[in-house]
Length: 264
Image (cartoon, rainbow, N blue to C red; front, side, top):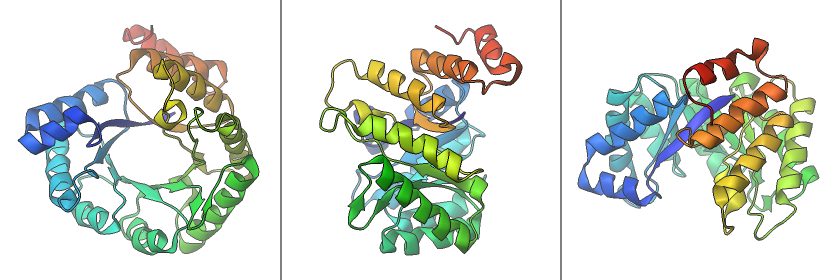
């Protein structure tokens, strides 16, 4: 299971304050904590700083790269911002994200190809948000065709079927879970990914809902997730379900996490 660590996001109040105040040590402590917690990529986002995003994200990128050897996941709605960050990176990143909107394709796809990055691909088009399993799978098929046809290796493609809040759409989780299973079956070699927090928006005890959804998604074939790896109960759930689902060869991931005192 590939873990993209989500905590360095300007939508979080403490992160925004650290960025505004130039608190490099706070940002670096977040990067180090997520690295030690088992992340494979550190997601970095400064999207709330409208008009200043490029400068703010550059500062974050520099700070994080001083603190960890992990590659970064560049998270921005602005292709120009992502393009400005790519030459600064020490390792090939993941780009978060692309979709089927023409402007997004035209802005992001050339960067993915030039820098040979991994890319999160959202099941979303200009006038279409995949709500049902069928719609999500159809959009995934179009993404696979478009991106691999342009030269993106299937192994660099991470399809996000997009789960919507259960508080407003009680069927969304089920549709997303079924879509994950179908996508992994139809397109061997592709990856599926999701951000958990959306599923629980508007509900009490959100972390419990997030853990339940992650467990179900792994059993359907999900092989990467954008999560908070410092959430020990979530991380333990991930390791246990990966084991139960038969995706942990010789139980080594689970045993290793136990020996590190990571399981609760």
